[in-house]
Image 1 (tube, rainbow, N blue to C red):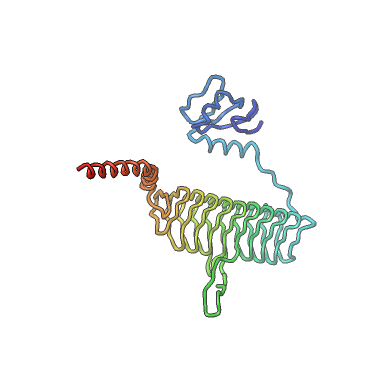
Image 2 (image 1 turned 135 degrees about the vertical axis):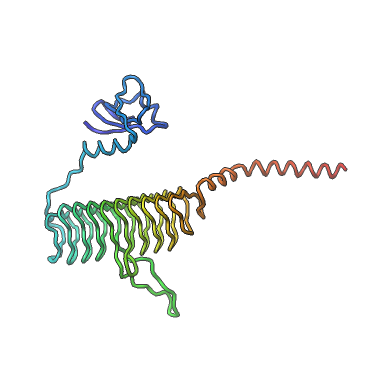
Length: 317
């Protein structure tokens, strides 16, 4: 018994269909069962499991059917663990480095070539994947996942220009990832200059996202690849940022804000607002502008015909 796409599923596999272009595959799939939306008609011979949210139901089923297996606790002989670190009940992989006074809680898994700096805290059942970095003094909550290459707690981009040139502003704060946060591959979350950079419970951060020093991300936020949150910005709960979106420094975004791809917020955003474009404006306004831009070539051709007709009328008179 397994899970697979509609195209590749076999008689012992579970799949799901969210509608749209996938509907036509219901007639040809060999899946043993397919999770579909309530009320969705299916072809004869297709075994349907109905749910209000097929993707959610599938995710739950797949997690139960194919649970992640974790290795037994212990420290690999090739790991480098400082004598002052506490790693009881944790799993430390080969060539991982655990600094002084670090706590890696029971059930946590620090994988090969990962680095955990002095004084950092790794919560229960957290997973720090290969080449991920947790710098000094940062806090990683329970069940947090750091994908390969994620960097937590690098110095923020703090600089000041003086008579002698560009000077570094010491970055003396920390990063706190609350429980159930996931950070994608090669994403960076910088430490604050003085206080903390914080990511709230259950938020998901995609690959190649930059969260700058002192930013605050609320609970259950979704931030897609290439997005950027500038220093001191504040995101409420359940904010969604699509790919290549941005929030500039000091901006506040209310709960349930949604950024369409490429949107860039340069002023505060009220709760529940949907945005598009750069600079960002309300989503429907942006859609109308995009539609209008597409009509510009034809509008210019019409204007040119009118101009010529007007010139001909003047010349004829």
